[in-house]
Length: 304
Image 1 (cartoon, rainbow, N blue to C red):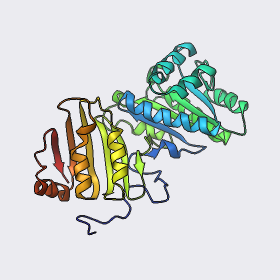
Image 2 (cartoon, rainbow, N blue to C red):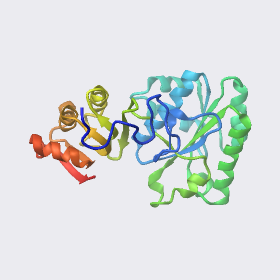
Image 3 (tube, one colour):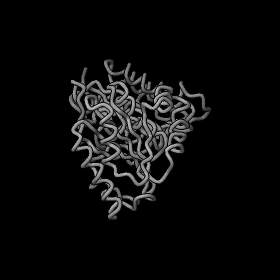
Image 4 (cartoon, helix red, strand yellow):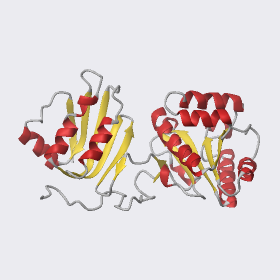
């Protein structure tokens, strides 16, 4: 089968072995975090934070790690209640972990970060510790200020000293001006991002959160079509609009294009818009040739 644009090959930061490029464009995938990592997540929506935090904590549950959630400036009971509300709808395993104490929420106000991490590590030195940090500038200053830098430095030193610990700090990205995340990155070892929805080394599918949708990179053909269909079916059928970012697509056959154009088949929302963003010219040519260019509910946003 000939390729209309580019080859199968590698795309972005993935390979057929399932490994990930930890220095890729959107940062390290959370599922690839290792002991010694102190990463930050600048989330744009509650759904993004939920997806990344859930993956991080679930990996810790599977590995038998001690789980600790830190939030400055709030009573532990209030933090536990907020976590219960977050997990109640679709994360019963994490809700149970909050309720039975496997996800510990210590009284962190006024306690050095290193002390809290060391106490958690002492509970099970063999398995390791995963620390989740709700990073609120209100309680420790703004990134770049002395109080903020001191806290993050304490977390970094505690993680490094423990040897079998890692930390994920979560920030609401809406707090910061464009380009204002550099100070955050300087306090951490890098950024964390959501794990891929699908990645077989030929096609990689990453979630989008604002707007909701998927980012595709690689080739869509007979071998990757089942993964694409599963990802499309997994989209929130209640979302008013979905975005399919095709900027990284190197090849797409007719069956793949039919799946992209027909994604609304799995939606319960009438008149939902599907935005095809940055489609390669080969895809645009196929849509014109097939008569799908004017498919109802499909909007084209830029051509690569």
